Amino acid sequence: MNGRRRGALVGGLLLAGCARATTHPLQPVTGPVQVGELALVSTASVLHRPTVGYDLQVTLELTWRGQDPLRVDLARTMVRVDGLSWSPCHFPADFDQARLIRTLDPGEVFRVDFTCEDIARPGASVELRVLTSGAGGTGVTELRFAGL
View 1: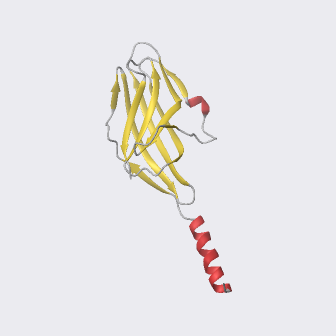
View 2: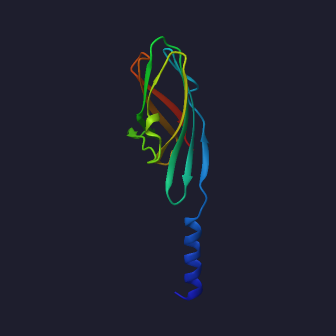
View 3: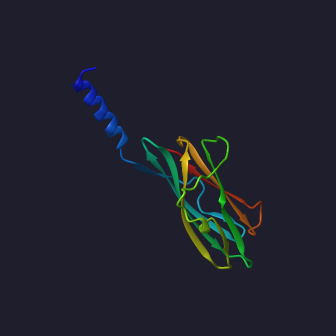
């Protein structure tokens, strides 16, 4: 390989490594979710970093209207892409661990942003399972978004 071709190849590889990350908002399939006295509003987007992969960025707003405290356990959030098996959400190492498990008092509104790192490319759908205790029902709330 001559010097010019080798330079072009190395330059192309460097450019690919420096490719910009892009964010793709996902459309919710389920609107705001009501579970007993708990209201959840969610938004999500996928961050694609060409040389790294896909991360799911989520914003949850939980409004608790019950009479007793409600426990929310984000540490056990599960994610499923395109109907494949459920897997744990892998939070960034620098994520504030104190925000993962929270007790909401009656009338409290809790808003949290978090990222599930290294998910599969969401072609058709992304689903999240959030665990609560004290809202009634099964304690599992599923949120669904259309894929890319």
